[in-house]
Length: 327
Image 1 (cartoon, one colour):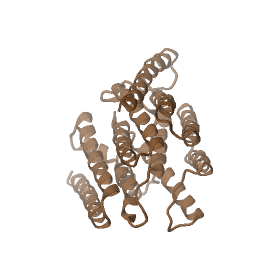
Image 2 (tube, helix red, strand yellow):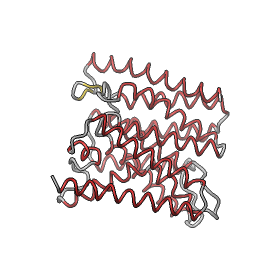
Image 3 (cartoon, one colour):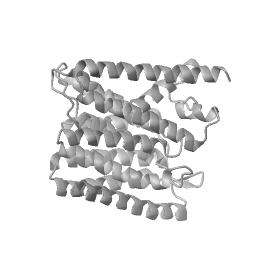
Image 4 (cartoon, rainbow, N blue to C red):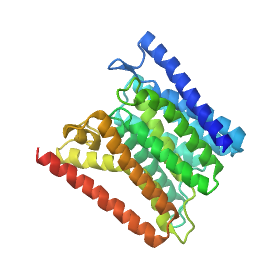
């Protein structure tokens, strides 16, 4: 366990040091500032993640090709997001650049390997999955500490599953991500002193989508376990579905900004930013726990848990909708 502690401590320390340094540079030269708060948090998280992953490679003897592929493509995504922070890209440009990153992943062999589908079917699932999760975290980043806290919970869940299955590459990557995020949250909890920016929110979604693809869930006789990553990441996916539904009802395009996020609905009901963060984190923990259970349960138990998650999600959806209609 000492090696895991060293990886986490290294990622945490690097993250904090980078944030302190780049926060001062950003403020001094007025670079990447919004509402007087620097947007360099995501870049710091990405760099700390990379450094901690390299340390993890030496300590846990991970696969160099896999780790270098993930870190390399994730850094490309980070740079694309940074360009978006400097000058906001169009929706089409963002999807095109993200699509390039997904193809790079596929070329590196990181994609779904579901036996029921062929190569092209798995490639299509990978593209939809990575783009969906990546953008769901970007959409979720609308409140202090929210996106990073949900990502931390999801990363810890993937670490737990990979620890059970002795997958060292996933352990290294997920632990490094959790360490970098822990350092970032020191400055991002309400009231935030630094933001992720588009670079950070896209990066988090991208890395978590990759981890979900890399984890071993189940043999062919337990297909319900394939729902595990979806359930672990269900909160940002649910929030995105929530947004799309209500924006379309209003006649807005799904990518048009509005206050239809689950978190913002809580705010309109009188909850403070801290209370909203606690509520959303509790939901994320609930989904993460259910996802871990499904990853180990038999088909019957896994199906029951998955149905329970759907019912709970429907309850949240109906409850928020009724509260809004009642004023």
